[in-house]
Structure formats: C-alpha cells, structure tokens
Length: 461
Image 1 (cartoon, rainbow, N blue to C red):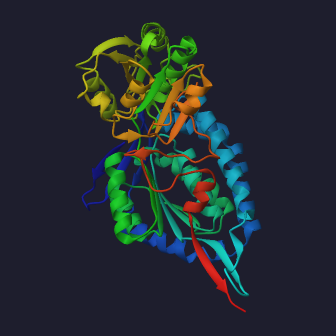
Image 2 (image 1 turned 135 degrees about the horizontal axis):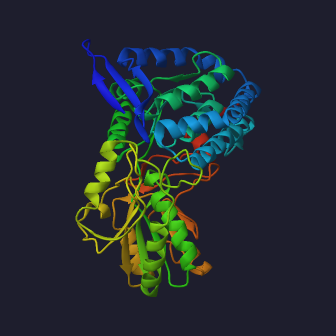
C-alpha cells in the first residue's frame, strides 16, 4: 500500500498484490475527516430504527449476511489472496470463520439483556438491563480482512449499535466488498466503511460512542488515550511476542510441526504467531533438530497455490524489516526462497540470541523465531513472561497436570496446549495482557458486554 498527496492535499492510496506488486488491486482517495464525521452522523441517525426494530429483525439481518458471505466464499478467498497475500487455504478458512461469526451472533439478539432482583427490604423490584452504546467505531488491520471486521461488527450490530468501519488501507478492497454484502441486509446508515488512514481514524475516534481497535502497539496506545480522554469505552488488541514452551515429555515431531506452522504460516503475519521457542532441559537437542527440519521443508511460494503455507509479506518494508532482524544473529535454519516479484522472506529459525536483541523485545511480524533454552518449567515461564507482551503461549507436554496447574504463572491471556499458538475460537473471549491488550475481551459473550452498558432500574410501588 502506498499513499500520495494530491495537489489539493487529498490523500490517495494504491493497494497492490503482495505476490505481484505490479498488480494494482484498488486505488482510492481518502474521504477526509469531515466525511468521516458525516458517516458517524448518518450512523447515529439510523440508530433508533435499528436498535428499536426488535430482536427478530436484527437476527434475520445477521443470518442473511452469513448466508451471503458463504455464497461468496471463493470470490472473497481469492480477493484476500490477491490483496493481502493470504495463502488460499488460510483465506478459505478465514471466510468460513467469518460465516460462523455472523451465524453465532445472529442468535445473540434473543439472549437476555438483564435480570430482575428482589429489593433488600420492602416491596418493589430492581432491574438490570444492558443497552447499546450508539455508534461503534471499528479500526481494523489488514491481516484478517474479513474475520476481524466481522468479529467486531457482528456483536456490535446484534446488540443494537450501528457501525462505522475504518479498515487498514492495505485491505480496502476486502472491506468494501464486505460492506457491499452487509449493506444489502441492513437498513441505510447501519454499516458504513470509511477507507483511509490516520486522518479518518482520528476523526472516527473523535465522533464514535464506543471504539474497538486491532493493530500495532504504538497506534493502539494512542487510540486508548484518545478514547479515554473522551470518556468512551475502548478496547485495543495490540499484538504479541508469543512463546511456545516444549517440555521433554512432549511429542517432539508433532510439536515441531505445530510450531513451524505458527512461525511461518501466512508469513508470520498474525498477532498470535510464535516468535520464541523455549525448549526445556532435555527437549532442546531433539527439538532443535526437528524444528530446523520442519522450517526447512515448510511449503513456501505463491499464495494462490493450495499447498503454500508461507506466502509473501504485505510490503517491501515488511520484507526488509525481516532481513534486518536476522542480520546479526546465528541462523539455525532457513526455509525455501521464492523467486518472483513478490515481497517474500524465507522462514527462519535463529539461536544464541542476545537478550537485548529486537527479536526478544519487539513484535517483528514475519516468519522468524528464536530458539531459547530453559533449565526447567519455572525458567521457561520466566523467559516467556520476560517480554512486554502477553497474548498467547503454546505449551507442548504429555503431562495434563503440568498443563493445568504448572502454568498458572504465565501472564498471557490465552494458553494453548499441544496446539499451535495461532488459532482463534470465535465463541470464546480473545485478548491478552500487558502491551498485548487494553480493555474488555473480544468475541463470545464478552463482546456483547463490551458493546452494551448496564443500567439499574428501581421500581417502587
């Protein structure tokens, strides 16, 4: 994605195919701050009709969106391959998850919105009731161009809010196509996409009634500050520096396969990707050999090829960042390189990384990970917790007791046992600790709580 200033100081964007940068997917002009505010005004005008239209209307609309997304599966998957370089197998899986998200939240309008309580003494009743905030401002990244906007928008709409979505410029074509699908099932003004960059994002922050953000730590921190200053609810999911802990009793070959896919699947461009591999005690040498082999043989190439696991990075700058990160470390193994015009970087496993290296302190967002030794489980937990982030940890062991009780000191929001760190269960809360997240969790029932506020009513006789 490139941005340019026109003579009238209007920003224009060009979205390019990461596998073939000469292929222009979309060109658009950012609408600016005033147009973003107008979109919020239209969404607010549509709020009463949408929120008061009843559970059946909202449920039916979300069900219709799910059906329309499912009918367009191949088209949407192909668009994700072309615009954001997602391997086709993952793109199809993302569309399937998107369908499941809309279907799941299509039932939410029928859920109870409150409770009835007895008074402490005397006659009367006490009621609690959850109500929508108003206009939900959603700011989303490019790496899950259908699923992330959907897991924010679907619960917001189910609860009776209206939505204004500001997608990442790199995923503009995907967002606009999703909007076309949703808008056919929704009244005017209920779901609006505002393409653009920081100007539009800032305007949305200044006008929305509730904000949900997914993206970088720096931008997320600014979003939280702006929303907090206005006194509106905000959640921010801001990435990870995730560890995989492998104990000596683990199935080493299986663990290596899981970890390699979590390092380099979609070129490591997931907030849940594994970037640190912690081998405990005697697990180090067999894991070192098995993981190096798994990285070397990982399918790399054209994202349109169903066999590809690791495709291109989103931009030339992202590719160069990976090259810089591996420039002064000991490389244990590299995967295949991909000839062609795309922004590719070979999957890489490194070792003997100094503590101050950026790989152990920053989210690099690419197909590279460091192998680290640990003396025992306590040491592994210490190493895992030593970074500013706390999104997800994967743990590989045959001991269920270790999995359930030995890992309570991990300060990550999610723990995945004998599974890759990547992967999201859309009906459960999603989010992390420390620099990985701020505010309430996303997805599941947690999302319905975030997009509503609680009121207490006292009914005296």
